[in-house]
Image (tube, rainbow, N blue to C red; front, top):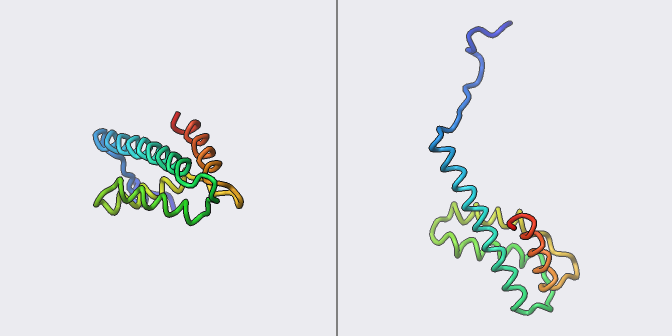
Length: 114
């Protein structure tokens, strides 16, 4: 049966121009903050026990710890920031040192935030 006057169509929602500008600003801020934090993580891994192995638990711990520190008391933003960090930080290789992992992080930053 043909649809009449769009009655069966789902309503579409569009952000207003100010809301879209705010969304873009927030996304850019998150992108920049993720880059800054990832740089700090790479520095930390290079200067603190660089010859130790890096493991997945360390990657998750660092993302959580830095996100919580930067987001202060905003739990929702800390969760969003942690998820963004985990998307950017690669899974560590089995026998990779913290120093080599930091180098991979820097290479990714050069491509995504350079």
